[in-house]
Length: 78
Length: 417
Image (cartoon, rainbow over all chains, first blue to last red; front, side, top):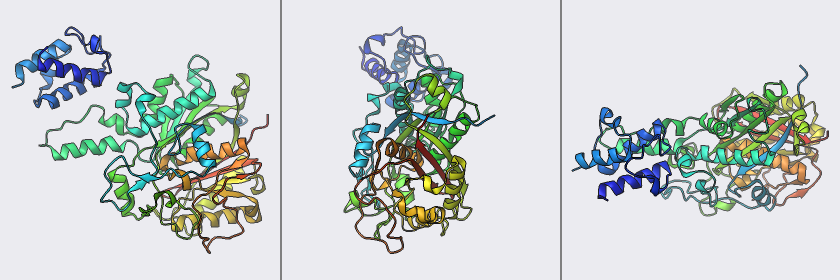
């Protein structure tokens, strides 16, 4: 697992209170990991803080699974 | 309709003396002080560096970690104390008509701790707003009542009551009215306050409201002592389940006491100073007695507001003597704030629990830390100094007063079916 993927995973486990085993790339924040709309906003904020980037709202709305988050961050984090 | 009788069927408490009603009562009756050096933030540069903090309190022992994170401490303690009271009353969404069960919760300040942190981070940053989506719902004072209802599925009347340090007494009175006049059968009520942070300690210090006895925190809260120098901040929550007499009897509930009555008044005098003759305090006790259909001779114990401030303690005693006359000499009077510190918006709830337990146990918790008599106070009054006193308590009155000039009193009496 990439460094980015493991950091993303750690944030999700912490913020959503889920087990590590549930956090697979296909897992949807809302459908599989129990997040509501506010939790999702908070996750995006935590990614921004952790990786010191800014994710525009229209991009943030397309990030709905663990895999999408990792892919976006791997592409944009320098 | 004929007003309905209201009884107390469940209790819950998180206090600086312990994280259950039982531990709280043991601490109270043994004269234990909950004060110590502040652990929650670095208070080195503050005039006051001690408070009565909760002990070994880990919210995740009671709440799911994800849920706990969405709450400021005042909501965490509210939800936990309310859970304890609901369990104690032995009710659940499956055993009651949830539309007839409400929540009215008191808090003075609300969720200030997370709010202060987020503002600090914003101002220290580059101006980019990075506020949590939970900033608002951790802050607003009504949210504790909301969380309690969501957790238990209780769909009756739901709101919070704010009147500074009288908040949870006002909450109990409002909840009592709803049951009395048939709008609900069961009410979860009480209050919580958890604001031992830089802004509140600094703010109260600026008002010269807090004791500055840093060399001896455990004796700092000394109501009615000549050398009292201000209140000591406390934190925590108290919860009560109120129920109509008929509803409680029908389900065979354990009944602690009857909530006989209550009243609320204002000083209309000054934002922080009490009326010098205790006018609002006098009126509120008179009206509470009238509401309960009782006279001064029916009360055996007054759990006073008694915060250990130079002016407030004297004004309250003047008011008691005016209202009770010679009956004042046969009362037990005590300020349990000498042990718990001042729980602000939660004070009325935890002190109501002390009043209730004094009735059920026939034991009056003391006013600890008495060293020197204050010549301004009538020495014939029994302030229950230093050691708990056994006596039959037929009825107990609890006073709370808040900045803004709010006064609220409630009276509990022995339950007789």
